[in-house]
Length: 211
Image (tube, rainbow, N blue to C red; front, side, top):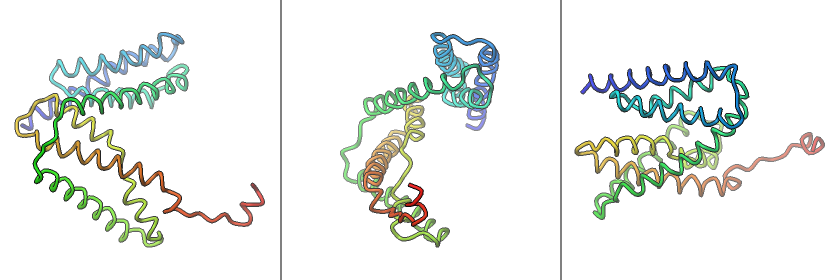
């Protein structure tokens, strides 16, 4: 198990570094308003496909490629980043759609009980850590930070990758991952909507004069 796992990591990182070094080195001096954004997307797709065909982790290869893009000088980088952000949001939506189509949730009551139990454990653990480590925050602020859970794209990518692997015995785990991700999205959205209720900032007299 460890051998194939290490192979996936090494090949994924190596593929991302190799393709990123070639593409971004060329883009240091070359820029095209129409072709440069396509080159970035093509590099990401090429890194993913190459890593997967070599037995590596395609998601890791794309992540390494993105890391290189963020820390390497590229001509007209700001414009490319705006295009990359739009593409990233589109791909996030696509990942959620694919997961929703490919995974069927269980109708067993025990499954739903287990999912709520895991969610409750996560929330209680977050609140306990915040209560112990941050004494200066008020109760409402701690509740806000507890309920403001991660939006789930990282979990979605992991679930999407595992669903493609078709690993035996992982169906229940995948289903739990997806339903808990849905819970966190709902809770986070509601918490953000009523953020003013939890976070009540008082404007000081000096700040009022400045405004």
